[in-house]
Image 1 (cartoon, rainbow, N blue to C red):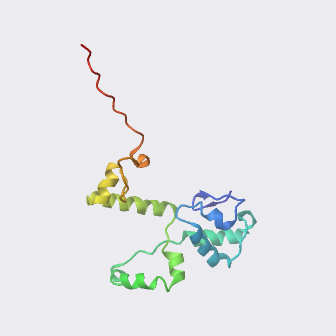
Image 2 (image 1 turned 30 degrees about the vertical axis):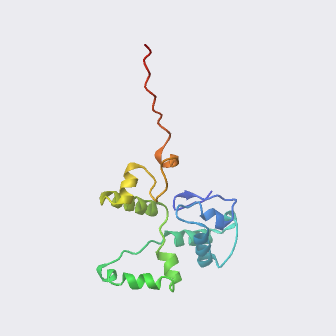
Image 3 (image 1 turned 135 degrees about the horizontal axis):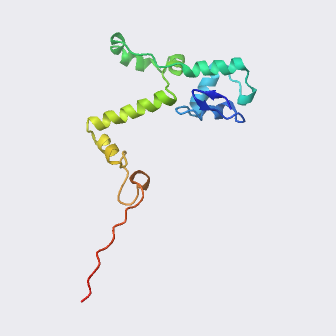
Amino acid sequence: MPRILGVDIPNNKTLYAALTSIYGVGFSTSRKIIQKAFFNEIKPLNKLSKKEKGELDKVLRMRVKDLTKDNLSTISQTILNLQNNEEKYIYHEFLFEGDLRKKVSDNIKNLVEINCYVGIRHKRGLPVRGQRTRTNARTRKGPRKTVANKKIESK
């Protein structure tokens, strides 16, 4: 099993399916990455040459560029241009594995810190997006905690 971004990728699956074992890469993202790196070739991972594996690793290791103060004023323009500039979107705007996990946890910590409704729900371990909690939400709340009835004394 080859390792890409610190993740063991299964050999027997096609490249499209194998890349989805990386956290943050779904089926459509893996297709976009392969189209840019391999010119639409569909191969099992064990049939790739070392050069192709190196190219794939290089594409996946590209990171989001840090925004400077000059870039902060043009963020709205950048967001509008994302649809037109597909290559920049594919190569520089995706986060994978550790970077993505860190960003998600930082976002949750920020929500908890500012005490917004979503942050409070995270802190209490309850569903965040408006689901009912009276009868369901066992995944989020954990196993039932049974409360015993009081014993009635007999005369």
